[in-house]
Length: 450
Image (cartoon, rainbow, N blue to C red):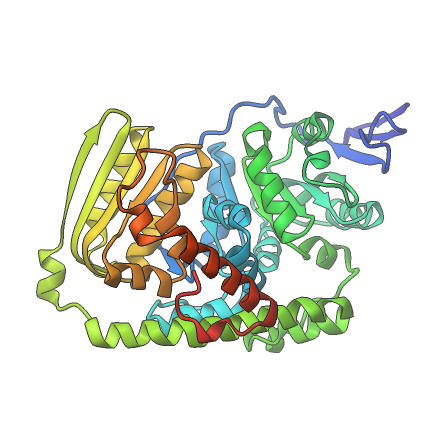
């Protein structure tokens, strides 16, 4: 192995099999003067987030400016922030891959990247000013003039990584490349080698930009975030290609009107199959979930008196904290929900949510439940949701949260009514029907898909 050191930029370029633990590609690492000693990540839920449930995904209503400020503040405070950027592809993957879905829900910030999700949110009455995509976030960080951030790039190819390094470090960008690593097409396990983690942690980076595909990137993050030093972890998809110039971003008109996918197909024709699959799922969600949600709201919209009458009860037994919700809950009376869930997660034990007394729930209330679910999963703690009444089960399924009905049955005590509500035969038929719908893209005919 050969080591080259040049001053004052302190660039270390390593060549040989000893640098890449898989012996496939060179690694370039820059130390930016920051302490690179690894300390355990402090993970705390933030129930003050303007987070909503959009078809089973947790999405924050934020602007690019707000995210940029949060990133800068988190870096200064050395506070962990895992950022995801859900789009139509995330929605499709989350409906068939529980591990991926849980990885999305375990994030600290979920920016609405895809215009279809923006449209769905607006249809549900959520005031979303615009999409907040990962590429725009990175552009915003690059435009910063008062401070510079060190970024480590995991993904793409070695050539693209070097082009990113040259562009960022030879100009006046607010982001400096602290290192690049091209892992190739290995598995999540092979990319989780301690040697790779040591390279990332030794770079002194503020941000870790991951571009190895949505599913693999989030599963890799979920597996390794406790061993990573950079406070900010972002799965930003094709951003690294845009920065390198290997792919041209869509014009603003295409981005504003939800046509970026058309431009991406022009740039990368192989993407058309993914977009076709995404479109089928979007169609099924529109007719099987969004429209019925709107009908449910018109039929059962709670009055101000009903919202004022809503209440909750808390109790703790051994290592399990239980919150029982009663009445109608929406984003308009969400404050007690935030406070109760925040207190519950501070106990560092199992969490039980009882919705049997709930008469109505909207995307704002369910967003807080998903936030708690994601945090419990992230911390490997128990989570159980009890909802035996048909009306609340229907609400959960229409919002894409049917999976919560089966969450954690074996982690705390088993539900006594589980077999009566979900017989094995019925579950088997449902799984077969769901797999058939996923294959043919006709899931819109079944509003109880989850």
